[in-house]
Amino acid sequence: MSEEQVRRRTGGRSARVRRAVLDATLGAVAEHGPDAVSIPEIARRAGVHETSVYRRWGTREHLVVDALLAYSEEQLHIPDTGTLRDDLITFADSLAAYLDTPFGKALVRSMSAAADEPALAESREEFWSSRFDLARIIVDRAVARGELPEDTDPAFVLEVLISPLHFRALLTRRPIDGHLTSRLVDLLLDGLTR
Image (tube, rainbow, N blue to C red):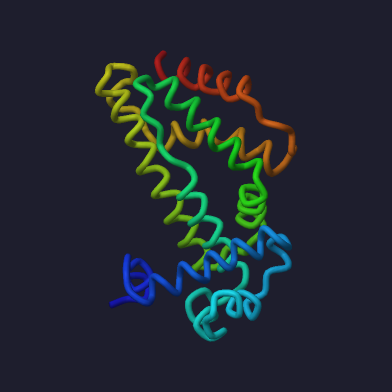
């Protein structure tokens, strides 16, 4: 069994240790920010040995990004309102709200600042792949309702919708309000349905 398969197991000691370490990391990020997180402190908080943390995550950066990605997956649900427009607005609003939290801010900054090492790149790819799979649900439902053409690319829809939100959160640090998200969705839908 590969290390990745072990890491993905849903139960057992490995899952409990991973959850404890990720929760400890989130607590430390919330209290002190991502730059102040240390593996010895996380191991102490989680009640595990430092070598367990180093063996699984390797670096503080990988640990912080993994914790933040796991948390964001838990927080960002795919809505089912009955219409594509409302699904996209609801999703964009929840993402905007998440990006305005300390964890959301830490995630976008950590992901953009971290080096592109293979393990970190793999974590990012896994995260975005899972998000694109979830976005496919929104697009598939919209295609079935006749709201979108059958050849609509779900990954493209998600990228176009969330890029401006991440741009504001990371670069301009301007607020994101419901007016912006609904305008983005209307612009996106106009382009998709032409």
